[in-house]
Length: 77
Image (cartoon, rainbow, N blue to C red; front, side, top):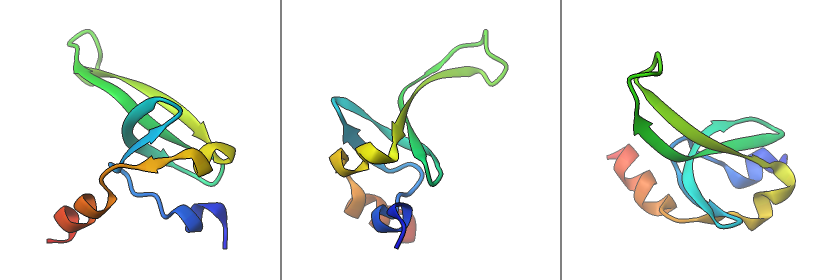
């Protein structure tokens, strides 16, 4: 079982790691990113700007899943 399979991350899942709280935005074998800030800003082509934090796989053991059960219930109803 790979580390990625062990943690079974879901995009949008709310987590805390090393004093950063955010939603998982990107997932790959080596790292995930979490969005810690998302705000509207018309100066950006997308209409918003985000602050994303890279969490390398060796920190995955420190992740606290905040709303895993709630997120599964909402997305599968």
